[in-house]
Amino acid sequence: MTTGSQESKFGLKRLRKSFGHAWQGIRFVWSSEQNFRIHTAAAAVAVALGVMLSISVTEWIIVILLISGMMALETMNTAIEKAVDLVTPEYHPLAKISKDAAAAAVLLYAIGAFIIGCIIFIPKILS
Ligand SMILES: Nc1ncnc2c1ncn2[C@@H]1O[C@H](COP(=O)(O)OP(=O)(O)OP(=O)(O)O)[C@@H](O)[C@H]1O
Image (cartoon, rainbow, N blue to C red; front, side, top):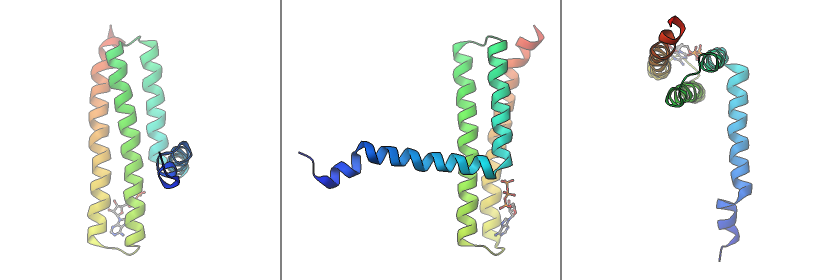
């Protein structure tokens, strides 16, 4: 038997509310972050190339993991930037380190994703 409070903790309504908050987060990064829109455009190019070059199931899994990882990391970068702005609106060396490190994480992943994309697509384009 479940109590009312358990129901509100695990119910469908709560799940829908969580998705609603996440959707608001996606809308925010889309409208406010140019980098997120650039990554989305790059993802669309990768998907188009995947279809045109008939990549394998394993390659699709890798491409989808790279795209979702890139988007998630960019979204997390925005979350860190906003949290830092909330705590320290003024200049602070630790705020700089925090934002620079978050941006570095995005850059490192983007470099890896680009290299893997080249490994998957270039041989197919050249053949
Ligand atoms: N409060 C602060 N104190 C110190 N340095 C800061 C602060 N806010 C921003 N910076 C510096 O300015 C850079 C850009 O920060 P900003 O918040 O404008 O992010 P952004 O331009 O949206 O970055 P991104 O292009 O990665 O989304 C940071 O990486 C950091 O080096």
